[in-house]
Length: 159
Image (cartoon, rainbow, N blue to C red; front, side, top):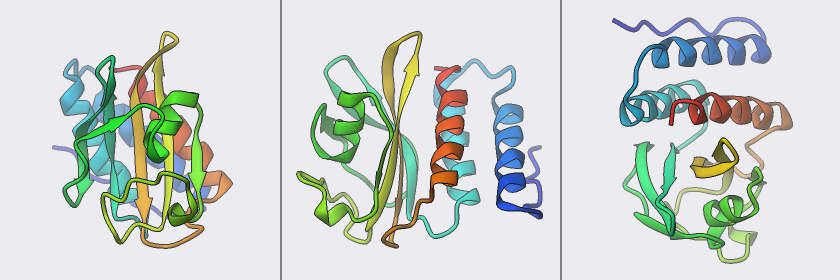
Protein backbone atom coordinates (compact mmCIF):
# COMPACT_ATOMS: atom_id res chain seq x y z
CA UNK A 1 0.00 0.00 0.00
CA UNK A 2 1.34 3.42 -0.92
CA UNK A 3 1.87 5.83 1.96
CA UNK A 4 2.33 9.56 1.26
CA UNK A 5 5.57 10.89 2.67
CA UNK A 6 5.38 13.90 4.97
CA UNK A 7 6.24 17.17 3.31
CA UNK A 8 8.48 18.73 5.92
CA UNK A 9 11.56 20.76 5.12
CA UNK A 10 12.23 23.34 2.46
CA UNK A 11 10.18 23.56 -0.69
CA UNK A 12 13.09 22.09 -2.60
CA UNK A 13 13.27 19.14 -0.20
CA UNK A 14 9.52 18.61 -0.51
CA UNK A 15 9.81 18.58 -4.31
CA UNK A 16 12.59 15.99 -4.11
CA UNK A 17 10.38 13.85 -1.85
CA UNK A 18 7.52 14.06 -4.36
CA UNK A 19 9.82 13.05 -7.21
CA UNK A 20 11.03 10.08 -5.14
CA UNK A 21 7.40 9.10 -4.52
CA UNK A 22 6.62 9.37 -8.22
CA UNK A 23 9.52 7.07 -9.02
CA UNK A 24 8.32 4.55 -6.43
CA UNK A 25 4.74 4.67 -7.74
CA UNK A 26 5.78 4.01 -11.34
CA UNK A 27 8.56 1.50 -10.64
CA UNK A 28 7.82 -1.78 -12.39
CA UNK A 29 4.33 -0.63 -13.49
CA UNK A 30 3.99 -1.11 -17.25
CA UNK A 31 0.48 0.38 -17.62
CA UNK A 32 0.61 3.99 -18.81
CA UNK A 33 -2.93 4.84 -17.65
CA UNK A 34 -2.22 3.59 -14.13
CA UNK A 35 0.99 5.61 -14.03
CA UNK A 36 -0.70 8.76 -15.33
CA UNK A 37 -3.57 8.40 -12.85
CA UNK A 38 -1.22 8.07 -9.89
CA UNK A 39 0.98 10.89 -11.16
CA UNK A 40 -2.01 13.24 -11.49
CA UNK A 41 -3.18 12.40 -7.97
CA UNK A 42 0.30 12.84 -6.49
CA UNK A 43 0.84 16.18 -8.22
CA UNK A 44 -2.57 17.55 -7.20
CA UNK A 45 -1.96 16.39 -3.61
CA UNK A 46 1.53 17.91 -3.44
CA UNK A 47 0.92 21.34 -5.02
CA UNK A 48 -1.20 23.62 -2.87
CA UNK A 49 -3.59 26.16 -4.35
CA UNK A 50 -4.29 24.14 -7.47
CA UNK A 51 -7.69 23.17 -8.81
CA UNK A 52 -6.70 20.82 -11.64
CA UNK A 53 -3.74 18.57 -12.43
CA UNK A 54 -3.61 16.07 -15.21
CA UNK A 55 -2.70 14.99 -18.68
CA UNK A 56 -3.75 15.50 -22.25
CA UNK A 57 -2.41 12.82 -24.59
CA UNK A 58 -1.47 13.40 -28.21
CA UNK A 59 -3.29 11.03 -30.56
CA UNK A 60 -1.38 12.12 -33.67
CA UNK A 61 -3.92 14.81 -34.46
CA UNK A 62 -4.98 16.59 -31.26
CA UNK A 63 -4.70 16.46 -27.48
CA UNK A 64 -7.23 14.16 -25.79
CA UNK A 65 -8.09 14.24 -22.10
CA UNK A 66 -6.24 11.67 -20.02
CA UNK A 67 -6.11 10.92 -16.29
CA UNK A 68 -6.58 13.98 -14.08
CA UNK A 69 -7.65 15.31 -10.68
CA UNK A 70 -10.19 18.14 -10.59
CA UNK A 71 -13.47 19.11 -12.19
CA UNK A 72 -14.50 17.60 -15.53
CA UNK A 73 -12.46 19.13 -18.33
CA UNK A 74 -12.40 19.81 -22.05
CA UNK A 75 -12.05 16.50 -23.86
CA UNK A 76 -10.20 17.54 -27.03
CA UNK A 77 -7.80 20.42 -27.63
CA UNK A 78 -6.44 21.23 -31.09
CA UNK A 79 -2.67 21.56 -31.40
CA UNK A 80 -1.79 25.25 -31.32
CA UNK A 81 -4.98 26.29 -29.47
CA UNK A 82 -5.12 27.47 -25.85
CA UNK A 83 -2.28 27.07 -23.38
CA UNK A 84 -2.11 23.28 -23.72
CA UNK A 85 -2.25 23.27 -27.51
CA UNK A 86 0.33 26.05 -27.75
CA UNK A 87 2.75 24.30 -25.36
CA UNK A 88 2.34 21.10 -27.40
CA UNK A 89 2.83 22.91 -30.71
CA UNK A 90 5.92 24.80 -29.51
CA UNK A 91 7.17 21.85 -27.44
CA UNK A 92 8.06 24.10 -24.56
CA UNK A 93 6.82 24.79 -21.06
CA UNK A 94 4.36 27.63 -20.69
CA UNK A 95 3.77 29.35 -17.37
CA UNK A 96 0.80 31.69 -17.67
CA UNK A 97 0.32 34.09 -14.76
CA UNK A 98 -3.14 35.19 -15.93
CA UNK A 99 -4.90 32.78 -18.29
CA UNK A 100 -7.55 35.39 -19.13
CA UNK A 101 -4.84 37.45 -20.84
CA UNK A 102 -3.61 34.49 -22.92
CA UNK A 103 -4.82 34.75 -26.54
CA UNK A 104 -7.20 31.91 -27.34
CA UNK A 105 -7.34 30.57 -23.78
CA UNK A 106 -9.74 27.64 -23.45
CA UNK A 107 -11.70 27.99 -20.21
CA UNK A 108 -12.40 24.44 -19.05
CA UNK A 109 -12.79 25.59 -15.42
CA UNK A 110 -13.88 29.19 -14.86
CA UNK A 111 -12.09 29.15 -11.50
CA UNK A 112 -8.66 28.78 -13.14
CA UNK A 113 -6.57 31.96 -13.22
CA UNK A 114 -3.02 30.69 -13.81
CA UNK A 115 -1.59 27.62 -15.45
CA UNK A 116 1.57 25.68 -16.15
CA UNK A 117 1.76 23.27 -19.08
CA UNK A 118 4.75 21.03 -19.82
CA UNK A 119 5.00 18.95 -23.00
CA UNK A 120 5.59 15.23 -22.56
CA UNK A 121 8.37 14.28 -24.96
CA UNK A 122 9.77 10.78 -25.39
CA UNK A 123 12.47 9.92 -27.92
CA UNK A 124 11.90 13.30 -29.56
CA UNK A 125 8.17 12.64 -30.06
CA UNK A 126 5.29 14.56 -28.52
CA UNK A 127 3.29 12.23 -26.25
CA UNK A 128 1.02 14.85 -24.66
CA UNK A 129 1.14 17.56 -22.01
CA UNK A 130 1.03 17.83 -18.25
CA UNK A 131 -1.33 20.62 -17.20
CA UNK A 132 -1.74 22.21 -13.76
CA UNK A 133 -4.25 25.01 -13.07
CA UNK A 134 -4.66 27.31 -10.09
CA UNK A 135 -7.42 29.67 -8.98
CA UNK A 136 -4.66 32.14 -8.01
CA UNK A 137 -3.00 34.48 -10.48
CA UNK A 138 0.82 34.33 -10.59
CA UNK A 139 0.69 30.96 -8.77
CA UNK A 140 3.68 29.16 -10.31
CA UNK A 141 7.25 30.15 -9.42
CA UNK A 142 10.37 29.37 -11.43
CA UNK A 143 11.31 26.73 -8.83
CA UNK A 144 7.91 25.08 -9.31
CA UNK A 145 8.35 25.22 -13.08
CA UNK A 146 11.62 23.31 -12.76
CA UNK A 147 9.94 20.78 -10.44
CA UNK A 148 6.96 20.23 -12.77
CA UNK A 149 9.34 19.86 -15.74
CA UNK A 150 11.28 17.15 -13.87
CA UNK A 151 7.99 15.50 -12.88
CA UNK A 152 6.85 15.53 -16.54
CA UNK A 153 10.19 14.11 -17.73
CA UNK A 154 9.81 11.17 -15.33
CA UNK A 155 6.25 10.53 -16.52
CA UNK A 156 7.32 10.74 -20.18
CA UNK A 157 9.69 7.84 -19.67
CA UNK A 158 6.82 5.45 -18.82
CA UNK A 159 4.58 6.36 -21.76
